[in-house]
Amino acid sequence: MTRNPWPVTRHEAADEPIVCRCEEITLSQVERAIAEGYDTLEELKRHLRAGMGPCQGRTCLPLLARILARKTGRPLEQVFSSVSVRPPLAPAPVTLFLGGEDEG
Amino acid sequence: MKASADVVIIGAGVTGAALAYTLAKRGLRDVLVLERRFPGAGATGRCGGGIRQQFTTAPNIRLAMGSVRIYEQLSQELDCDIEYVQGGYLILAETEGELELQRRAVALQNDLGLPSRSLSPGEVRELVPLFDTATIAGATFCPTDGHANPFRVVEGYLRAAQRLGVTLEKFTQVTDLMVRGNRVVEVVTSRGRISPGVVVNAAGAWSKEIAHMADVELPNQPVRHEILITEPVQPITEVMVISLHTGLYFSQTVSGQILGGIGDPEERPGYNLRSSLKFLRRFLRELVRHVPALGQLSVLRQWTGFYDVTPDAQPVLGPTPGLENFIQANGYSGHGFMIAPKVAEILADYIEHGEVSEDLARLSLARFEGEVEGEGFVVG
Image (tube, rainbow over all chains, first blue to last red; front, side, top):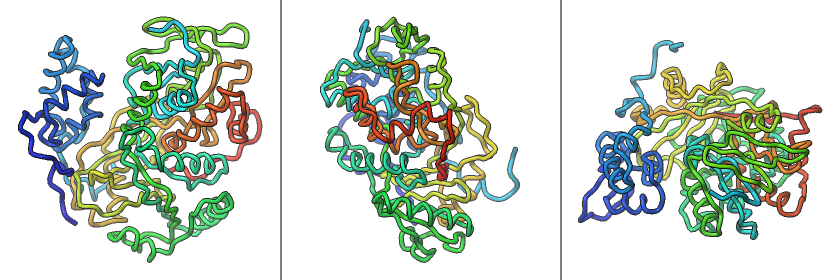
């Protein structure tokens, strides 16, 4: 069984800024999505898959929030407050959870 | 926001999105979709994406078969890649009792024209090469089952509906339904009031609360289900695997990630959305028992969502007794993504022509007044 490098899908080399490095999402893709109406962080994340890679958004979500705040004129705190945080926060080996007794 | 609409759909999950598109395609374009958060924020965007036809009741089998015929050409129809993989569903059995249930289910499924069949453990290994066949007694397989990306399905349906004139209002919460005589005459929202022709309750796990606003009691209960996704690996299988014995399910997404969950018989109804360590341990132990090589992976993310569960694990569909313009489209009990495309068609038949199909009649809210035959294969 061979592990895949991220991202799994093949991308062309981009000659513009990349916002989400895990999924190779570029600035113009983000700006286009916002213009199409994906104007909250949760919607951008689901539409572009930005923030769904191994870093779990640690790098790109603050960047996405700033772009979104600038494009929509909404305060950064408001834009950034809505995003969900999901365990285990960093990739965790399956073997960590095998063996032992069930927790309650 | 519009002050009136021929059809007001509450909920922009797969049910509301598919219905909005199906109505608009038929020329009913004065459709307003109200969504409390954003499209797919509820169960649809949290589900495993499986599209299964192997059920134990005729309505579920027929609705799922009708949906597969739609899913097969949906990417093209909506001009949106829904990441549809028709790799089949493998249902695992570990006991003689489960094998007997499967034999009866396959007989009914074959009668209805579904190409499902029983498999020996050795045949399972041909479909899923890394599978440890010592863990099972047998299985069934249906090659036309599959899976797709729920985000893409909702997005595709809604975008196509909007191109045809449907209006979507997100971050708009329904706060009350005003009833006069036998009709819902006003939908009150956080952003204004709407005068509806027909109101459709497609609010998933919150449908019970929406119905309550019109003094209609649904027997539905929200039940938390947990799910996780791993890092990606090279393609292992296109088959979706589920277990009657443990409630385990998993598949490999087109991005190469393993996506799966496991039902918890101890879970009580309620609106708890927290993730648990208990789930991680139970799911991973069962996954690795069946496919030991997956123990080499890392878990990327876990989350939860709700099944909207009815007493017979079948949906509540169609007009409400006593309220002729209030239509239920909920209670999917974990199977909404699988059957939504066909449900949208039979609901559109009713809204457009007043036509009540056999399945719509059998799945109406009124059925809970009599004896009901329940769905036997609820997994995950």
